[in-house]
Picture: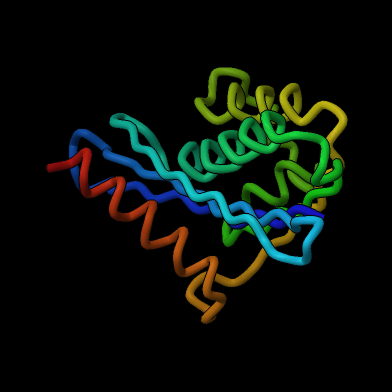
Length: 147
């Protein structure tokens, strides 16, 4: 099973609204080892929710490019309760089609394809190493574009 941790960050106090996102993907190897993939990125004029969803979208796109050796089952961990609830259907996040996050949600659904994703909400800053790592990467990406 593939495991993924994602995070997004945005500074709403800066008029340019810089944001960052990041993911860590862990794939089991046939020899018992683990392959780890990490990526981060950034954007201006964004929101925290958009950056949370961008991290999820980019992780899914990366998984889809991997060989089928890793399987189709994914557990995706996010400290964004809102994102997890939107993606699992607990919240109806599509009711305002003009909202900026709707295009991300639609692209995530379309990109997921045959992957079976178990979205899990985890508490932020609770000491989970991978969650702390993606938080640091997302914040650093945000700071980089704001500089």
